Length: 104
Picture 1 (cartoon, rainbow, N blue to C red):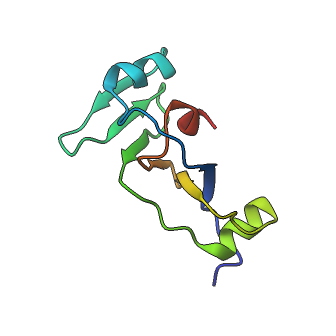
Picture 2 (cartoon, rainbow, N blue to C red):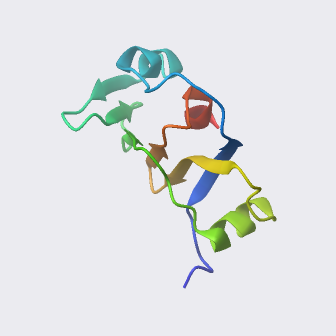
């Protein structure tokens, strides 16, 4: 049942971008946090005693059309891609995403 979906997307039209997000990028985005890069390439961002935020990078994110329509009140446009998604203290960024995707 998708009615209670918590997954949230960040979308954008495809544009050329530099690949990847570095540990230095993450430290600049979260200057007051303890940021580490895990062996699998993901990042862990810990602010105080809170549960860490996990940030993963992948090639593509396949959208759930229902969830996208609920969040944006529209269908995806031709050429639009999912740049990132957030669910349960985890941000996933596709190759189309960047630092803005994380901060959005």
